[in-house]
Amino acid sequence: MSRVRVHNFSISLDGFGTGDGQSLEAPFGHAGQRLHAWMFATRFWDDAGTAGVDNAFAERHEPGIGAEIMGAGKFGPPGWQDDPEWRGWWGPNPPFHTPVYVLTHRPRPPLEMDGGTTFHFVDVEPVDALAVAREAADGQDIRIGGGATTLREFLAAGLVDHLHVVQVPIVLGRGVRLWDGLEALEEQYDVEAVSSPSGVTHLTFTR
Ligand SMILES: NC(=O)c1ccc[n+]([C@@H]2O[C@H](COP(=O)([O-])OP(=O)(O)OC[C@H]3O[C@@H](n4cnc5c(N)ncnc54)[C@H](OP(=O)(O)O)[C@@H]3O)[C@@H](O)[C@H]2O)c1
Image (tube, rainbow, N blue to C red; front, side, top):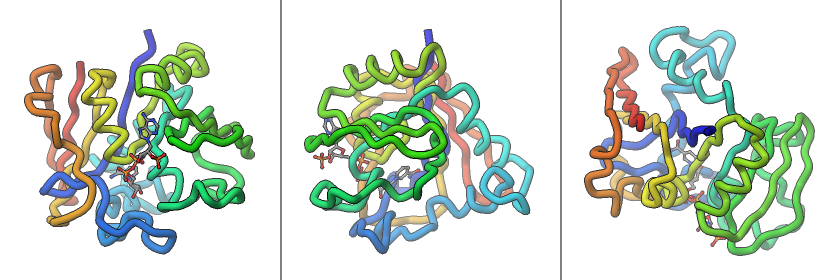
């Protein structure tokens, strides 16, 4: 059976997966780019980047993925549902190259993009979104792409098989929390932690 995976999901020391005040100009709110600075410095992101521990984790994002599921808050800034022209942050050729299921209470017709990405907009429970994505993934794994609210829903429903969280040594103080309501989640997984010289800690929760 294909697995449900999460990669490179970055949180602050106080557990926020995004900052406060998300907008078109600030996709991560007041967090800016600080949650993903570790990733932007790797070869996975930039050909001139580093090739060490952070890169080894970062590049596991792609192989074996046949579909992604994301929340409405990742697909666009607050209010994108009112803009019929909004096609996501990523330009004409988004980096997914698979079907992508966007959870939203205001679905719209599918958007076929260049490079093999099609965005499907679905108003269903996580378990039902997973069933559709699994069918589309044709035997490959499904990635839960975030944001924090969506990932928390999938974790609460017990649907995630492999979770890679990157703890970044910043304190955000406000934003959207990942761990709320997930008491004792770790009991369902083998947990490992790897510290990187960059200052981040890679945590893997594997069923
Ligand atoms: N830290 C990281 O590594 C990381 C990764 C990805 C994204 N992000 C950031 O995370 C932020 C977005 O996270 P978020 O927690 O605000 O939002 P989110 O998880 O992306 O989306 C939550 C929204 O998705 C819709 N939704 C979720 N479950 C649904 C369901 N079962 N049925 C129908 N609709 C459903 C609802 O939107 P509606 O009610 O509006 O339809 C809900 O408000 C962005 O700033 C993004 O840049 C961070």
